[in-house]
Image (cartoon, rainbow, N blue to C red; front, side, top):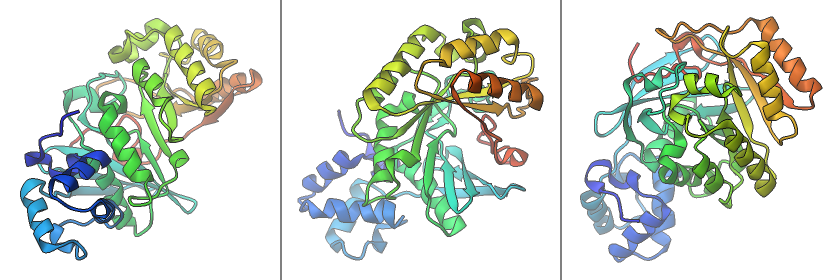
Amino acid sequence: MSRPDLSTLGIKALDHQGICDLMQELGQPRFRVKQLEQWLYAKAAKSYDDMSNLPKAMREALAQKAPLHYPTVVEKLVSQDKSRKYLLELCDGSVVETVGIPSNGRLTVCFSTQVGCGMGCAFCATGKNGLVRSLAPGEMVDQLNIVSADFGERVSNAVAMGQGEPFANYDNVLAALRFMNSPDGLNIGARHITVSTCGLLPMIRRFATEPEQFTLAVSLHSAVQLTRNRLMPGVRKYELDRLRDSLISYGENTGRRPSLEYSMIAGQNDTDEELDALLAFATGMLCHVNLIPVNPVPGTGFKPSEPERIEEFARALGRAGVEVSIRNSRGSDIAGACGQLARSAR
């Protein structure tokens, strides 16, 4: 794969191998890779001048060949539940949102993988204006470091559930996950890093072959094909029976349990027919179903299912032997919850 253009995104456009190649090009010994990655990600350096153990000539060459950029926090909003949403401006003027979620001594970051999104899900604010561009590996890791610095604590969990479809930016996302997991980066355990996809089957199959034990979540939202096509038009070509087969194969190949994300929308996917279909889809498969009351997004007209109905779904799944949780979204009062990230200041 050819090296990305460094003139705009700079060194944050490179994966680990790209940094190795750049060090070789600059005539630097192999150990400089470790030092540079530690400065970029473990220490979140904002300038090459801060990298005191790198030779001055090397720093000057890096600044010329691969500029070092760091996002700017344009706006920060704090939720009543202590979650924080950040609007970040990137080096080319693009903006993305990321959310920090503290809970019981842990700090989870919901990070974005693209500027905008091309999937066009009916219940999601992100895709209303389409896809602008995919994020570089370092631009994703930077989101975690910004949240960590603001909270004054280490990020313990990372979820690629912000703006964008992670598997539509597969190579860059995987590179970012590896920087997050690396001892020279953020040193987050692989099982504490989750990637959420609408269900891009070729990438699910590829993800199952990766050596790291990253966690997979799939946005299901309906097990009725017509309903899912209406709610999630971007993945209509991937039929539900093929998705189910891919997830069964994923579980068999990895031994890991994928999560099925199911936003409960009143009158849309909470009928008896929808429940029967969900039971048929999830029963007998290694999975965990997360039932999530849909979050309000202006213009969709969607409302969350009644709590009693969500409980009915949970009880039925439990009786069928399916692991299930009801997840209450964090940060909805600052439009920081699932489906609400929209790349705009409040």
